[in-house]
Structures are given as C-alpha cells and as structure tokens.
Length: 430
Image (tube, rainbow, N blue to C red; front, side, top):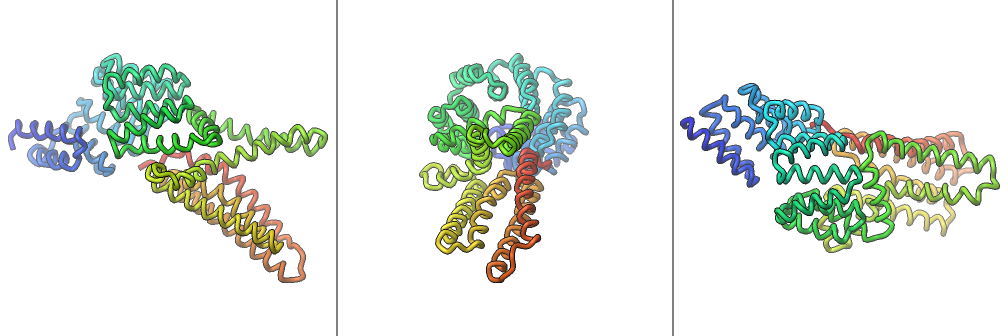
C-alpha cells in the first residue's frame, strides 16, 4: 500500500464513519496502519470508530497513539476529547479539546465538542459561549446550533432557543437531532402535543435515537395533568446546577420539619399547616413514584410500550408487582385484622421509593450501592414482620427489638432519599 493508498483508505474510513458503518471504517483504518503505523489521522479516526462501538479502552489507546505520532495535530486531541466525554470524564475531555482549539481555533466541530463537555458539567453559560464561538466560524454548523439551543433552554431562554432551532429546521428539515432538540424545547415550554410531532420525526429519521425515544415517553405521560405538573418540576430541576438542586431538596425537607414542629408546639395552627405538610409529603412521594407509575400505564399504550427502554420496563414491572402486593396485604388485614398483613402492606408500599430510586441510578457502582441498600431495607422489613408474626402467636407484648427495627426502617428510608439523590446524579467513569 502506497502513501496515496493510505490517504485514500483514511478518506474512505471518514465517509464510512459518517454513514455509521464503523466496523467497515475500522477495517480500512487497520489496513492503512499496517502499512504506516505512525499515521496520526488514521489512529485518530480509528479512535472515533472504536468509541462508537463502545470499545472505549481501545479507543483511548488509539487517541493516545494519534497524539504521540503528531503532538501538533489538533485532530488527535479532538479524538481524545470525544473518547473522554464518552467515558464520562468531562474534565479530561475539556482539557483535550482546549488543546485542539489552541492548535486550530477555526474548526466549529471543536467548539461543538467543547460546548458538549461543558454542557455535561452543567456549566450552561460556558456551553452557550462555546457553541456561539463555533457559530462565528460557521453560522450553519448543526451541532453548534443544537448545543446553543440546548444551553438556552437550560438558561430559561426558551423563546430564543425556539427561534434558533426553527431556523435550523428550515435549513435542514431532515436533521433528526434538531427535531429531537425541538421536541425537548417544546416539552420545557409545556407543549407535549407539539413535542410529540418532532420526536416522531426524529425517530423516523434515526430509529436508534434514544434521546428522541425518551422524549416520546415523557410527552405521552405529560398528557396526564398530574404527570405534567411533575414533569414541569423535573425539567425545572434539570436546569439548576448541583448546588441549586440540593438547596431545593434540603430546603424542602427542613421546611417540612419546621412545620411539623410548629404544629406540635401550637396545635391551633394545625388546620392551616397540615394541608401544607400533607401536600409536601404527597409531592415528595410523587417525585420518586410518578415516573415508574406512569410508565406502568404506558405498558398499555400501543406506542408507549415500544418507546419504553428495558430499564424503564423493568422498573414499571417491579413497581406494579410491589403495589399489587401492598394492596393485597392491606385488603387481607382489613378482612382478618392480622397485624402481620398490615405491616407487610405498609412496608411494601414504602419500599416503592427505594425500588424506584434504584432503577433511576446509572448502571455501575451507583446502582449496585442502591441495590444493596434496598436489599438491606428489605431484610429489616422482613425481620420486623417475622417478629410481629411471632408476637401474634404468643402471649408476649411488643419488644424493644421490634421498636428498634421500626426506627431503623424509617431512618433507612429517610437516609435513602438523600443517598439516592446523590447517586442518581453521579457519572460513572468508564
């Protein structure tokens, strides 16, 4: 293979990559590298192809080889940044793409990747600025246009985002990413019906787009007014930074405890404060259960059941089984007045929260930690019910162990809500 043939092989690989034929592109690149092992662009392109095939360790090695072969070539740094972003290492991705931009500040794709990494870090203003720098180089760069719109939505500037995406769709009405972006922008604006059209278009153009499929699920559920309120809350929280989110969570719990103490010390205020306390409790429970419960309803929807992901389907099934079991035990208690059935019914109903939260955590160590925690809570509940069953079949009264187990279970549920919120937001480094 001559030098010219090597360059031709790399060019063919780039075309194959654009058409998502990553395995074919990989074969071309490996043939080129067999002839010229130090070809930087071939190593960089191979890194991109391997990353798309989720072979991230090999992709990292190839990006490193590209940088080693040509330290002054920005394409190698770009490849490393993209691989690091796929490995959920946003800081390392930002370092690499900053070096690529320093070497070549006139490539809009580099600014788009910089914007994506900053977006992952929830640095909305910086992500917006990076996308706009890319648009200064090329005002019609699709990736920069979409990232600019996404950042504008997070900053609460939805009308500007709508205009940006509208212009992009006029230029290229067959862009799946732009349609999906428009769908999410409309969802943020409380327009699920209009959003559904764009999500459908996105999936028509790209049937494998999970982002659009997730949008269809949310748009379908948003037809219910209760879930629409919860979705507005979820989307609003998603626009806040980590500190803002924790401020809302902790502030809400502290306010709840303060109101409880006020009612305890001044019962005359109860009629005014109890509605607020109950409303908070219902809302807090819905933040955990609204998503899987409405996913359970989507199992009966002709489109919804196909749009749900495997994890969403599993979560909905588990929640459905737990809820059914809880109702059955409560009904058994009503007919027999057996305290064990009451404990099981209430306990299983409460366990809906940790089971739901466990499925929300990203796969990897966060979900493993929450799974172990949920199993531990299940063991405590089982021990509590066994003791209650034993007491019902003996003449003994309540024991300190039973009280301790109840207190441990209640404390475990409260602690779980804070632990789960932290782990759900975690990014698993790959």
